[in-house]
Amino acid sequence: MPRIATALAALAVLLLTACATLPADVPRPPSQAFVDVAGTELARLSAAATPDDRRHLSGFRLLPEAAPALDARLSLARRAQRSLDVQYYLIADDGTGRAFLQALHDAAARGVRVRLLVDDLHVDGAEVRLAALAAQANAEVRLFNPLPARGGHLAARLLRSLHDFDRVNRRMHNKLVIADNAWAVTGGRNIGDEYFMRGDAANFVDMDLLSTGPVVRELSDLFDRFWNSAPSFPIASVADPGMPWPDTRTDAPAGPPSPQAARPALADDPLDAMAADLVFAPATLFADAPDKAQPPAGAAAPATAMDSTLQLFRSARDEVLIASPYFIPGPRGLALMREAVDQGVHLAVTTNSLAATDEPLAYWGYVRYRLDMLKMGVSVSELRPHHPGRSGLSGEFRSSTSRLHAKLGVVDRRWLLVGSMNMDNRSSRTNTELGLVIDSRALATQVAQWLQQRWAPSQYRLQLADAGQQVLWIEPEGDGRGDDALQTHSAEPHVTWLARVRLGLLSMFVPEALL
Figure 1 (tube, rainbow, N blue to C red):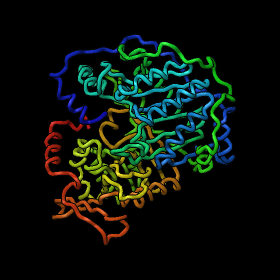
Figure 2: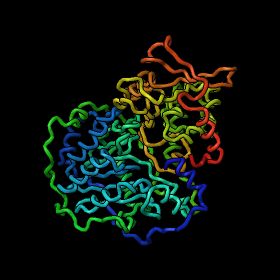
Figure 3: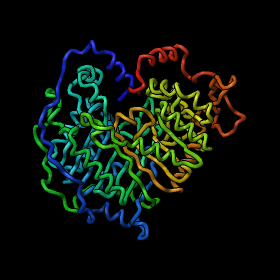
Figure 4: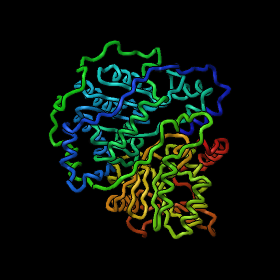
């Protein structure tokens, strides 16, 4: 949930003019992932790509670049023959969002069962298209934890839902595509132009994982838990009554498709090359339960994905590398960092600069801890707002602003975490999240090199000055490959002093629990 919108909504109770409610006793026909998928093309591709002595392991391929990350999703949608299970925080009503929904629509039209679960917060622009997908004979669409107020822009919906603020503040932040229970894509990207280097004003640096093998069944089980949970509402039960709703269903096969279900012919499909480039390793799923978004009254707080993540970081003996777009450690995180540094562990954090972030209040939450982190010896880098004129982690930025969105952790160059969780209070206690931890030195080392080498020209390195009381931002000039070309800033670069003052004043009225 955008932090500024949340904060303004929380401070605008006097503007509340109407109280909407959710429908009661909504039918939610339960369903589960298909397991009889061995005859599908995607299952055969997985089997062919997996050596006999690696069948007990899962296969992974990193997707740091935007184009392959989108290709993987669209290819899975085109090649699926039995099922597509899709779960997202945000599907934007833009070119990328429409192309993705069209791929799901086409799959349903040829007989593939499509189950799409979307967090309700940002559906207002795409609700008509989601309804059109739900009108397909083989497709279902559910909205997670809906706002009771329907119609209008996000701010208006939030204002009209403030009477239920504690519930609607809890969101499903997961990102997941599963095709034929054989392949999955997880990671940090939502579905929208700016997540795939298609935005004009700004684009996100991000990371996804293509997975196959045993971990996919675990992800399917997790999807089923969310799909069949109480916070998941069929879209027809909560949609805006004034929204144009399709009154006919597309003619499509009524039953499950055969493994030979028709699909468009694909020449040089990128998924085949990705399947030939897998790394096989053990993996552990860190995932929140769906009722984290709506805990039972009086129930003890359950263990969370963030709890597991912090335990992974505490296991480090030598090094922890973290990339998080919104990094607000809080007193608990600060204490854990101090404990690690005292034990000789090198900690390095990469986050957004103020000029790059899309959540300035979250940045100001991080500022409260930045000086202490630097004093204790944590290495801190911030992504610069403009890439220095070359292809970056996720693709070509052109003249757009670059923004970090990847959520990564590397522990001792052995364990790699790729997920949806940010290092902040929302991911810790408010949103549902998922992440995969892979025990692979090859993948962990590859991501460590991305963080420490390929990203270096795009970052400010933070240093202390004035006896440890002032922060300096060291900016590489040109390609940033030599220390002989550096520029030093004594305040947040590329941000006016007036903007910093305004943001500092506003942050005084926003509780850290909302960041």
